[in-house]
Image (tube, rainbow, N blue to C red; front, side, top):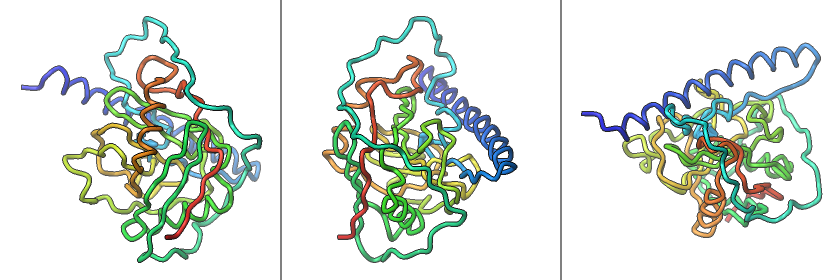
Length: 273
């Protein structure tokens, strides 16, 4: 017999997938329109989140099914105090490329990514051997300053628990202009279609091989279909930062919206160790 909680989670996931599909359709229309005026737009990565979640998530484009289908938007959400600092001075650069960067990372080496955010540093151990194209893309984008001064635009707090980042536009529809292939979908950490807390994965459009730059960070075990490339693991200090961000909630009260915390990536760097 299906319990009320299982039904709630099922409805949340179904809603998440529907939202992702709608966002994907809207993104494609926008890309076609912009191409007419010679603008180069990227395919958005949840990010399920989103969830990121790639996100976690279909590119933010599909609001995570986080929000339960039976949630009633009655009372206005109470906004928790912002636990984060003011962003560093600077602006997001409008960068775009037509093709995926050449694979230059050493797949046998260890790489770490540091997200210096307004809420604290989030360290990520990259899975270069298991997800070389993804790790290589982040190494490339971080080196170009692509993520600097960008907002983490999405937080889900109901059914799926992720923070989605990586969109310079802050709308859930931005990307680097190229896509990367899905990788590592059979990672040993993904058991029972659960992305465990600490996982960093790509958001996508709901279609295969549509990851771009959007990604999501899982702060609590989240059940998602294994279609989002898991490419990193958050360190202990970073998990504390994620928990702080999650505790501040999101701005809709429905479990899926912009974080109340001002989460801005001041600087992203990737280092080989």
